[in-house]
Length: 125
Image (cartoon, rainbow, N blue to C red):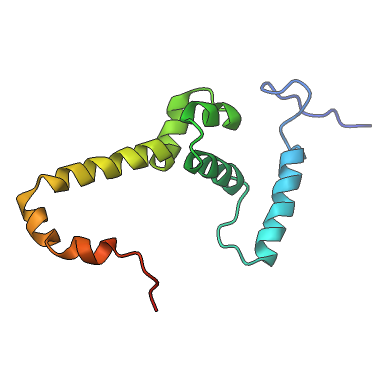
């Protein structure tokens, strides 16, 4: 007499007793092997979209477009993870620091004489 498979209340076509093989799982296993062979510590597939996003942002692509390319449902998700790499924000922060230091008497005293040294763009041995 054949046994009747257990019926799951949560799944319609699956009992929940075993893991479903997926394309994602297949590729994750393959990538894990590649990372092991190349001795990449903590290697995982999430590094690819991270690298993709950071490279786009450093190239000046707006955060809104990167968010769409990553498939995020909200720009807030993208901003939470990738805001430090937004090129315009980095440039603005650097300009803000330069402006603040240019008005600070202590910073001006510290910088006295260093501009001539740092402005030289010659070849260093």
